[in-house]
Length: 389
Image (cartoon, rainbow, N blue to C red; front, top):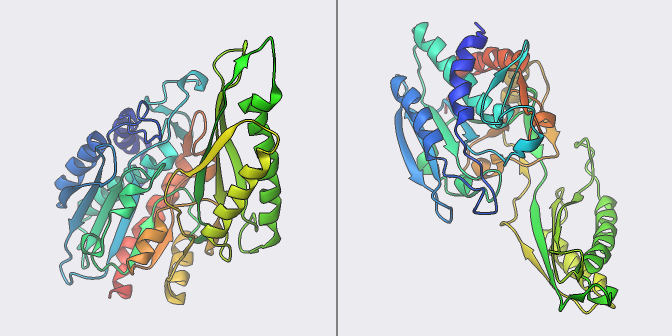
């Protein structure tokens, strides 16, 4: 049964907790309060909960919650999602991003779709099954990770011992409830530029870091074109992509710009090596600096993320289609699925909401998507016994 009121009572406190993950320390927040709330709910449902401190993070944690099965200690489903959100430009929102708003057909708030709405649906489903006295034969594991929006440090810290031996892992990222079994890899970079600068009354374009950054951008566009030479038609955007996302430069209009930072990411398909991409980018930076008295360095922001391809077998693919009403597909974005697949657990990305609403002003999730997730997840969780290890 779908109840907007019940889901509001779960999603409202989750959204109200600021759990932003950001590269800049001033915006970054600890996620412990969000995990404590989830742990309280799961503890009431008979889960054994513990926090894992995440190495190489700013005081971040993973939550691992486990409930044994009556019949077996293997099989079942591991459900995973991230507890962090992107930062919000509050001035552009029509509301306080951390105050959940309910409309006639949706919830609005930071993290509503990416991906606190997933946790609200999952807790609501478990409560409904508890009330129906459902007897769980195989283990259930629920994991909430840290820093998915930046370093993926939370997912990197997970081990097979923590996850166990589930028959299936489900990453609840917003897929409009279409099973995703394939996605691209990911690299992110920063180019830092510096020069002696000078007074704007004697402008010297060759010393101007903004001019140099524009020149480097032109070279990066050549790399973007080069990346289109190889295609994988399983993706809606078949080629690898390069996107320039940030440019921060200068401090005064009456100075020759003496510093700048350019940020961009690359999402490669299989067949293009990370090392080759980085070599091309180094060459692009060098070519862009020709004729400039500007120094520049190219720095990876995070460790590269390999693309993901699920190992689920044909019977599981058919079962997912039966439960969700959609065949499996591919995504252009990146998730934590590859880390779980590397631990030997067949993994699929499957969650309520549309990725188009994620990372956006006035982020929202439709009731229809949450209702569909409740129905599909109920079928998956109660019928997983046939796929027990």
